[in-house]
Length: 106
Image (cartoon, rainbow, N blue to C red; front, side):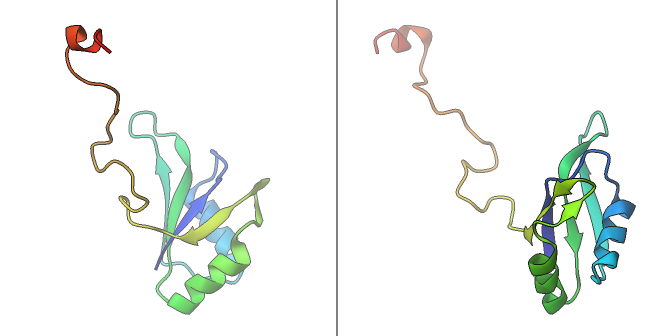
């Protein structure tokens, strides 16, 4: 099961997060702190994979809201990227559209 871990300090590394979970008695399969594609800086969230569903549920209940490097972490089950009803994979702006001449009629 994949868990979302949010409100991470920007200096946190994968090994920091893995150690923190192990100190809480949770064995993780993998840890991935998300980083900016260009700068390489952490983005403040990541994902933890735990093979056992009961262990993952225990991680959510025991680790959500707990202090990690001075910040209260958000730990919950990760949702698929397009869940939540956004505007699809391309985003979108909304607005009135049309040419400048057409927009001036509004």
